Each structure stands twice: as structure tokens, then as C-alpha cells.
Length: 295
Image (tube, one colour):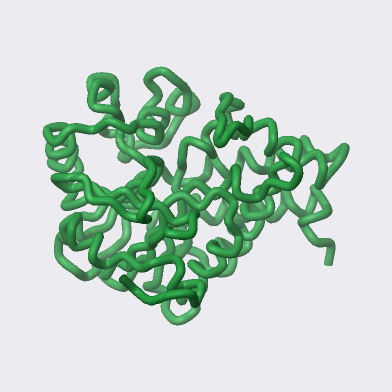
């Protein structure tokens, strides 16, 4: 078998197959995934290339035990897999693609601003690193003259990802929510239609606004909850030094890709859990890695 880590054609075939699987998932509905009121879902915040945490999360999800076990992942790429300033987090995309194919309809990577930036070539920096440039350098280092083939496969895989996971019990998982001041430009019906290229680009693309926002108001969160029939929002994107942070009245900020990161174990049959209940259901990454206990 030709391994995808060193062969661009194998990498492209893997990501292409995974992209097709995401699109035909039984839970896919336009630009989102809609999960039923049964089973459980393990929710993560930003991962940013941290492969050890990724594998611990996969183990905790126990996807092999039931088709009603789901794993929601976000912000897979950029930053955590740097080697001499070069980003090899495309390898985690490959691992994600393997997982999507091994457990069809159970693994749900959602679009985040870093994935969108990589797809559209938007400049984006983190900790002083020009992320899209470093990622492209990683593809060059791995695949040489065939790096363009790998990059094309990455873009196709990203565009197959849903924008949100909407649970029948009222929990909505997105990478972020629009800034309050941008709501007049935001198409709140975006989850009910396919995405188009303009959705990904600033200043007013719906996917762009949904994955870049950092300043939300109580009034905005209440209005969007009514619009989407949500009991609680779970987002990443913003810093949460303790891994999880409650923002009244109905939002949880979740970080997973650092040493104080956390995940949320969600019983999909629970009726309309609140944001504070979701915080209580969070589990420390250190516990998943065998370094601590649930807090």
C-alpha cells in the first residue's frame, strides 16, 4: 500500500473519498449536520494540529461501540504541528479523513476560520506565524513537485465540511457566531442552503461572519437562539484559558488544543440542555490523556 503521508496521489485520493463521505452523510442537511435525539456526541473546541489530543479525543468518543456515537471536531489545522516554522498539520487532516471513512456518518468536522483561510488563501497569523504560508510549506516539504495536487485535495475536503452541527435537543455547535454589529449583514438562513463561494469571503460572507466573530451581546444571542430554536451554543475560536467558559445567556466557549483544554460529552437525548449544564458536562483533556480526573 502506498502511504498518503509521502505520496500526493494517495493523499488526494484519501481526502477526496472523505469529502464525498461527508457530503452524503445521512445526517447532512444543506450546510449543516442535524443529529437526532438519541445517542451521544463528544464536542471539541479548537485543536490546531495537536495530534496527541486528537487521538485521545477519538478514543474517548468510542465510535466503534455504537453508530449513535458522534464526534464533532473543529479547527484541525495550523500552529500545533510546527517543525522549524513549517506546519505539517495536513497530516492531521489525513488522519481525520481516515476516521471519516472508518466511521461514516459519525465524524463531523465543522468549518472554522483557519480552514476557510487555507481554502481561500486569506492571510492569517497565529503566534507570529503566517499560517497559510507555513501550511503550504508543509505540503511542499511532504510532497515536493506534487504539492499542488495535495493542496487541491485539501481545498476540496474543507469545502465538504458542514458549517454547523445542529442537535435535535437544541444544542448548536459552530466555530463562532457573528459579531453583534455584523448581524444586519448575516444571512441567518445559511444553514438551510448550500454554501457558495461568496459565503467564505469578507466582509459579509455568511461562513466568514459565522467563523470570525468575537463580540456577541445578550440580545443578539437570544435573538439567534429564537431564530435557530437553540437552547445553547457551543463555539470555539475565542480563548478559554481554563478550557471552557460560560457566556450568558446561552453560549459556551470550548478550547481543546492546550494543556488545560476540555471537551463536552453531550447526551443527545437530553431535552434542551442549558449552556451551564454543558459546562458541567465538560471533561478535562488531561483526564483523556490519563493525567488527571474529570473536574
